[in-house]
Image (cartoon, rainbow, N blue to C red; front, side, top):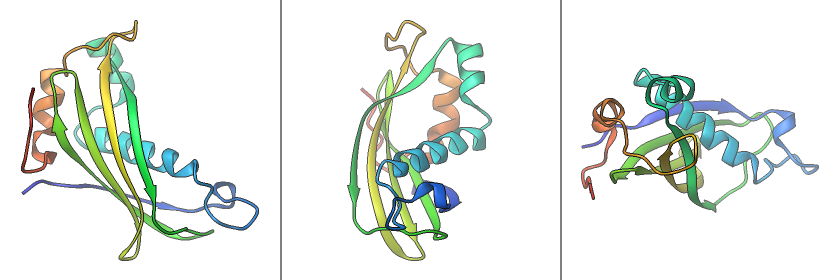
Length: 141
C-alpha cells in the first residue's frame, strides 16, 4: 500500500471570482503548494534541490478535471501520491476534496531538468525518500 501526502488549505477571497467560486486556475496553485509541502515532508525543498543537485522540478503536463465548485472559506484537503517514476521524471495523482466530496482530480507529470532545461536523472536521495509514497504499481523505465 502506498502513502499519501495531505495538505489542507482554506479558500480566501483572493482565490474566488466575482461569483464567489474558486477561479479555475487557482486550483493549479493549490496543487503546487501541496507538492512543495510534500517535498518538505521528506526533507527537501526546491532551493535545496537546485543547490545540491543542480536540478529543477518542472511540470511537463497536467491533466485536471473539475468535478464540483468550491467557495469562499471552504476548507479543502489535497491528497497527493506518486503514481510512477521514470529515470528523469515522476507522475503524481492529486485530489482536492471538501469533507468527503471530490472537487478536483489532477494527474501531473513532473520532470527533473538541469539549469539549461535538459532532463536529468532523478537524484537517488530524492528517489529513495519518495519511495514510501509510490503507489503499488511502480513503473521504472
